[in-house]
Image (cartoon, rainbow, N blue to C red; front, side, top):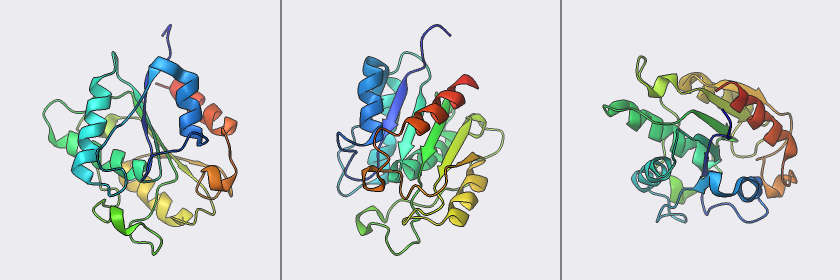
Length: 191
């Protein structure tokens, strides 16, 4: 492929600020990256986020790579399950999912309580064939590594463990997260 695949950026609750790696990567990618635009950033509604992902994917000239963080991971997992129920299936090249939160954990935001933990994607559907990588931090305060590994198994995602990087966000000190960008680049080479 002569051009890089487009990205759909799927941040977590309250969106990602300008210093977050997702925002940095989006600026670097320019017009080849689009961010979802749900109406419910602060009190996330799963249906609103599914529609926002669908709109962002539809705006891409070719199947994009979903680049999700935190609650965005749960939103993408939910979107893939919903897409599997549709006749056409998802039109995405892959999903790069970073630092899933655990909806059953005490620190999970009450405002996002409508988001389920990842569910199995029906076998034989286009959604089940979407190559997926789940990036797991060993000391994420919002999800234990064991729980994240269980999510990956449920979703059929390959796991990329990155050691102790907290929630892989600004508070964790990862900055532009060049190592993560390398992981995404390596994943894109497989698509």
